[in-house]
Image 1 (cartoon, rainbow, N blue to C red):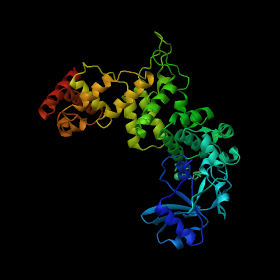
Image 2 (spheres, rainbow, N blue to C red):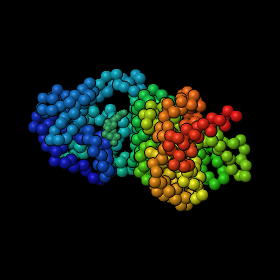
Image 3 (tube, helix red, strand yellow):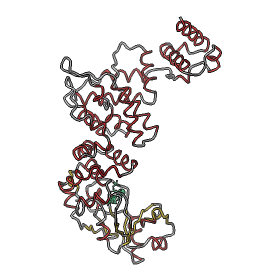
Image 4 (spheres, rainbow, N blue to C red):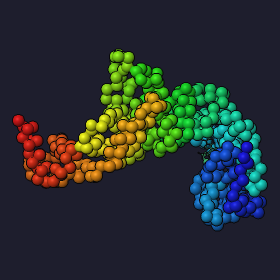
Length: 450
Ligand code: ATP
Ligand code: MG
């Protein structure tokens, strides 16, 4: 196993501590990942120096989390987060320690950490690895194991249960049996954790190389039904026909393809949630050996919106994922006219259409690994080759005054007409001029009043 050897700046940084009679250790994810040969630029340091000592021996120190003993030192162009050795006590709310106390030894500090693989330290300078909790053994065998008694550790901070699942997804590790049993017993406590922290762990799990591993741990321990009940409800929902997996399995397989391709979070989320409405939309009985799932794309976008709102994702992120889910069920064939292509782009949104194609490819390949990608590739070619910029209602060559001139007031009919005009212009772009649009509007109103 590779022993971490920090660079020149880190060594010089450690020398300053040594010269002032203090010790400095690299701890946490950087040590774990370095031992595994993985990159991790997020250095966490721990020291016996008090925050006031660090402020004294360095010129530029930002008190980033001084209550918890953390300061950030600006040193030779680097930013180093340093936390004084501390212990934590009394977690009466399963979230935060009631008290944080500075302690004098590294050994004492490492006891408050969550997993053995996160409690390795490297003494600086010198690079000696300190491993009080057999973290190196667990790194070798690929195990996530609590330090001390798992139930106690998860009762202190319920978020650690999701962190265990996340690390399994990132590192392709298994969760050790006792630790896993404790999560199953205490999963209900996840409701005590803030939405933001839950959403953050879920996002990190999706961004891992083995997201399904983490999600499966969440499902089997009971965490999933508390944080993403809609996905839990997909478990065991059979599809029959050409689908070899239930809806849940298919969602995970689609997500895995997104992870293999290193797609960004919004696409991974869309892959995970694209069939989320299938349990609700499944026809009562299987016909011709398969079920139908009418309208599961539109309904899926609604459910996706409620999930992402609940988890407090940003509006922009939510809109994007919903657009992908809502439009994933297209069936391209070469007889689509240019108007149909423009309507498709307009429906997806120009900024989303390429990702809709990617989602569709992953969806198809999750069903049949050697699915023929030609139709999607052809559609992409036609989209890329589309000469005119595709329009939205706002780009119609007609203004509000023009419509009010015809006696229309802003309201449902007004939007209906604008949408109708847009469909006409997408079919025939040359119609996008004021006279033609006014003429179409007049005719539309005449027909409507008949
Ligand atoms: P990464 O930075 O790659 O997400 P990390 O292990 O460095 O992983 P951080 O959140 O940066 O995670 O935390 C640094 C260290 O602090 C961890 O390795 C662990 O030792 C400790 N730690 C962080 N969060 C907790 C927690 N909720 N409970 C116990 N220890 C924790
Ligand atoms: Mg870290």
